[in-house]
Amino acid sequence: KFTVCVATLLSAFSASAFVPAGRPFGRSGTTSLDMSAALIVQNKGGGHGELGYQLAKNLMNNEKITSITILQDDACNDAKEPFKSYEADLPDVNVIKAPVGEGLSAEQLKTYLGDATFDYVWDNASKNAEGSGKAVLECSKEWGVKLHVYVSSAGMYTPAADGPFPMPESTPIK
Image (cartoon, rainbow, N blue to C red; front, side, top):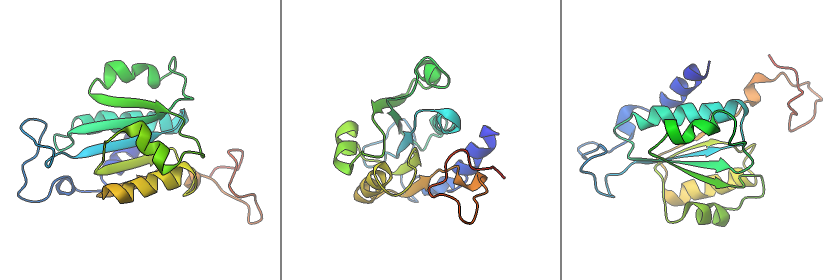
């Protein structure tokens, strides 16, 4: 189930989208101009936690991605999967813990990430384009991101015409 989701996320762009034509790529012999950095903004767990973990594992095997950072919600339980496997399974991934809640601003996001910039962003945490979602979008625009993917489980629900918005997780599923 998660493998299909990760494959779908990775197929959202072609391999040629990673590096402009004629430019060298790969983990060895690259300069900062050749680097393709990926950011996965990760919530505290559940299906999204597993999805981000599997995405990072797949990106680690892509020679055109030279660095991967997971901005992980610090509310995650490190004793549970997939978080307890980060160190063993994602040794080359930079994991930064931060409060990735709805109150996160673009300035706070940049503070947590330091001077890093990214070419590819997977927002696997935001609920909408407000709060942290807006912060991720603003930073993506500033960084000149080549691909910004927003991941949401909202499509699995069957909301009532007069139902509440945003939909609670108790909304019937399709």
